[in-house]
Image 1 (cartoon, one colour):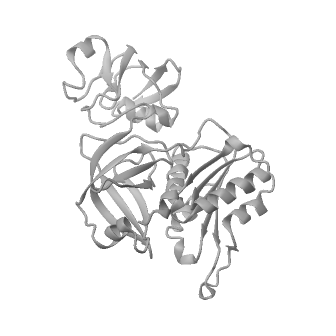
Image 2 (cartoon, rainbow, N blue to C red; image 1 turned 90 degrees about the horizontal axis):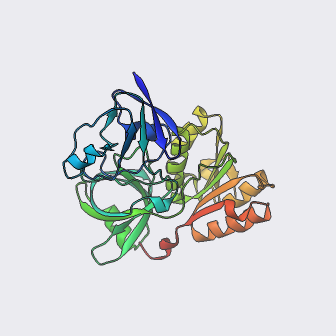
Image 3 (tube, rainbow, N blue to C red; image 1 turned 30 degrees about the vertical axis):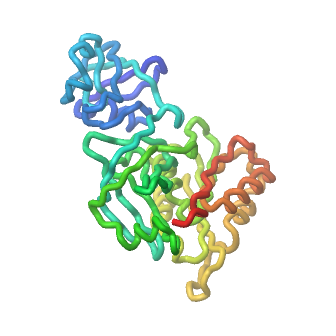
Length: 339
């Protein structure tokens, strides 16, 4: 049986099944409520039950006290509706609304994604979750006080592990360690989520994504989130790489294109190898975008990759009429710091 849930003061409405927590139902319906651990331990998702009844679920007394319950407070990550319910809580609409945390994490899996790209799956402690917006990044905190920034490649709803795409930088202190010494079960420290590069969902404009190299990582998060939310906006991804082997996960956007009529994938190689007999687009990825979309006045553009590519995209898109406030970018400027 399903129940109608109303969020106040926004007035947003969604449905929750009997076996579904209020938080899980809200996230499934596209409403971002604050949360932390998702298991009743931290209290980040605490809100007020204005009307209706809930099963409070299992929780730690430090996160929800008897006084909280007497005041009709509940933890939405473990409580379930037993009738139609109205709740009061804030909703997350921007990066400033999300808590930045410094937490340990464990390397759960190391996967070779391409000839020079590794995928890391990081597992947080059972009592912790990092809530983020699609497109944001985290910092890995090194023992020498330095930090390395990596975009989150997984979508917010798929947060059992934090997924990173790391490209090998010859001579790079950290990437040499990742590729040659890092092992599963290693413990890292991270801070996040960080950054203002995230999908703006309050618009119905068509979207052009421009990725260079591992700039695909945050865009993978954005597109996966958009498709999960069943956004009907037209989306076109241009992924630029030097050669065919540098497109390290082409099957992912190819599958999106096959399964979603509102998504188009256009790979662009700047220096295709003759032996690959590349039949697709060649040249600079930004030039391909401008050739296809000479008038960008009605679009949003999200660009991620090397600083030179992002700068070229910003200039070219503006010349094609893209409003300045509709260009969103994350330049991998830390790549200039070896490793």
